[in-house]
Image (cartoon, rainbow, N blue to C red):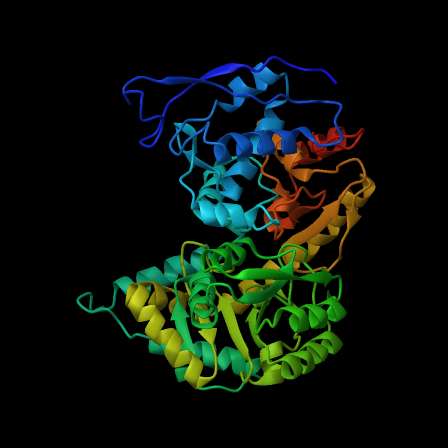
Amino acid sequence: MIARAAPRYHIQPGRLAHDAVPPAHPVQISLMFTLDPHSATPLVVQIVDGFRELIRSGVLRPGAKAPSIRQFAHAHGVSVYTVVDAYDRLVALGYFVSRPQSGFFVRSRDLRTASAAEGGPQYHFDSMWYLRRVFENRRLRSKPGCGWLPGDWLFGEGVRRSLRALAAQEVDLGGYGEPKGYTPLRQLVRDGLAEQEIALTSDQVLLTHGSSQALDLVARRLVRPGDAVLVDEPGYPNLLFCLRFLGARLVGVPRTPWGWDLATLEARASETGAKVFFTQPRLHSPTGSVANLAQLHRLLQLAERHGLRIVENDLYADLDPEPRPSLASLDQLQRVIYVGSFSKTISPNLRVGFAAAHPDVLEDLAQLKMISGLTSSEFTERLAYGALTDGRWRKHLRALRQRLAAGQQRTAERLQRLGFELFAQPGAGMFLWARHPAIDNASTLAYQAAEHDILLGPGHLFGLDLAPSPWMRFNVAFCDDEGLWSFLAEATRGPVGSSS
């Protein structure tokens, strides 16, 4: 064991720190933990555990500033990427809070909650921190880990034509619009779902500020603090953050290339008493997998047996060239609540999504929408309506699906040539989920990639427990950059990305 002298840092005390010392003066605190590079415990975990103990023991009080990443790395002789990974986990665990341009600070925590969390991996995510990090990184030159399409793949011309047409109309800017959303667009959604053999009225459609608001409204309608909730594992980060914020106990249902591990689903539904399952059967993010018809039928049977409500997040439906059945089409909105979006195919800046449900549930969702933000933007909904009724819309969708299919094939081939294992090969949609035998912690690789102006999608972001993962999500629409492939070729020549 190599012992390092514990460095001394100037810790800026917060409002609650050391009553005996005037707040105007910094308190010098010795960070009394050392790192052992030869330990079986990864360095990242040692750093996390060290800070947790300092915070629990009161050495670091709420509001205290942590050493900078580079300062800690230099003092302890470890990689900057290792410290970044550790600090990110401390943020996710609720011990640190990240403040832009200022650094990391000890977060105020409920000691009862903190003590309960010690018994198991019950992480308390800072969703705004994560979302901010994702969107701050939009400016990176290469973005194969992102969750959106390139601007020139979207329906920009259709939006511009719709905007010109809307500008020529007399639009009432003095009202709030309909509570359920712009009626012609709700009727258009109804007709589109009818093509998918989902029979409903336009009154069973609620327009929302993107699919994220739809999922949030559904979660608030169905979930109470302490409830066990079934979710895909790996899963959709925005949804996982939302459910954690509501106090749900997340119960993972492992994904397979053809759907779900249904035996595990049934066992966990029985063990936990969960009554809701949030899932993404088609072109799942992050794995790209698609549930087959037999799996859909079996899932609905299990839902009936265990009294499960299913929330089907089908926001990538327009990217699928195959006319597949959905859970909603098989169930006809009896147990299933269906969520969709136009933001992925028209433009992410047009935040227009929707929920379709049984009338009783839909009315509750409409009330929640009014309580949380009144109506959604009729102007935006009219703009989306104009794009969707544009004569070139279906041609745009066909071309987009073809581009994605070609991107799927090219990206899959190049990943496999480098030795990556693919979880599934859907041949459609944006995502491929892959891992390499030389990479055991993709988050470390992602930090290295950022130094090369590349945004990767490391697997721990999609996990229920933030545990290190070798898996990565690749967005095929952003995988034609040769700099990405040069970086991956170099990274996979030897062991990289270890958690230490």
